[in-house]
Image (cartoon, rainbow, N blue to C red):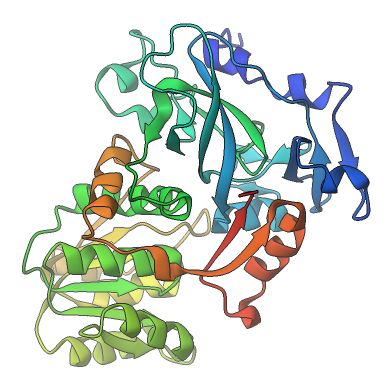
Length: 389
């Protein structure tokens, strides 16, 4: 028997958008794209197409705020939903689904009973909205990232925040201080991912750390590790350009460019030599089997490989080596209660995320932005889509 839908599952049922008479897939030359008041959005679909669409303009319901989304970053999972059509066996694109979950914007309307926000406030949007019911063990105990009825905007079937106007529960909007920009507010989402990993991995001042992968999550991990007082920090990647970028962010970081021909054991020799001291913790930000194995072989006895990245559903690891060297292998799923911490770190100047944004596009050109984000030859780190006018 299918369980009854929760309040938020009902409120954000995607059919209310898809079946609305204002919903329309737009051609590249559609004049709606030039209308600054139209609620346009970017979606992926089961045919692996990325499209601009027109959507109904939402109105604020009880406990809800309407946000004019000013900035949204493209996440690797957005590209994966577009290109592959799913992440894992349950998150499957079955219809048009709005992209985007790294967003910040301006509150333009509030509904009944909203007390924590005012029109004009700048907010970061936490896109994972759990059921919040007392009979949900995960919500009740504060591990709401595991809520089985979570509405996570941009994860099918729920439409994401890469849109002009977005209705959101006010309780899951985080007010931004005056010195935090919309771009920084959007970047608080990947920072929240990293902070959740740091909390579970028990990162401590003085830890010697390996960061595997110099993509956006790896680079945020690098910045967070530096802010946490870790030293030395070694970071790896396949591309020298990304390692050069990493070193521009943290000049004391040691870099290792991975050669695809190396075995995990050979890679580990290079990593240990770069570190110059035993490594106790690896923050694995690629999800790739070879990278995880390399991290395992790089660590000293009793070390921990903490996997932040997302990889294939089934992988193989060197079990006996892990067992004989007491190597812990640990994972995370999204995040819980990390946004306030992320905002404080950015507002206080402890973590500077601004250099990560390498490309910017207006909302009407979001499809172009996706093509840049998906093309490694473009050299993007974080692609942002803005609607600032």
